[in-house]
Amino acid sequence: MRAVRFTMNGVLNYRRLVEEGIQRDMAETEKMIKTEESRISYLEAVHKESMRELKKKQEEDMSSLEIDIYYTFIAQTTKEIEKWKRVLNQLKNQYEIKKAELISAFKDKRIMETMKEKMDEGYNNMIKKEDQKVLDEISMGKYNHGRSSLK
Image (tube, rainbow, N blue to C red; front, side, top):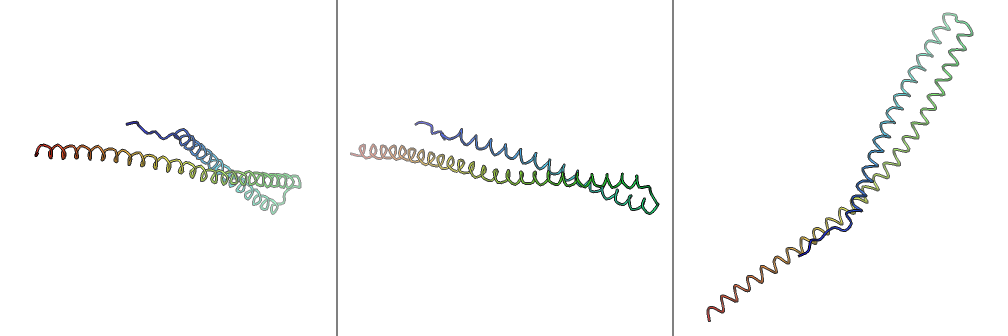
């Protein structure tokens, strides 16, 4: 009796590798998203603190040069916040694309696993039938042998 092998093991292994690669990419992107969210939170806190300081200094009668410095700094932090928010949105879009790719890769892998399971099941059924056939032949041989000895 020959051993049956799932001939698509290479494809199944490839699909598993693709799925794992996408999962790694998603984890890396998720880490980058958290980093950018932290950066934005920090910049927003700096921006808010600078605005508070500016308001306080204006009440204390500050020079126009100091006001210009504060306004320039606040404008720069505003631009930085906007820039990093755009980067964050791009990362979130990349994450969603990877998520869709992961779902597709999972489905592809699952199809191959199902095919493998069905082939294994078919092989096991074939073995059971062959075993039953051998057992039936042995039983018939004993039965026929017992009948011939009675004569």
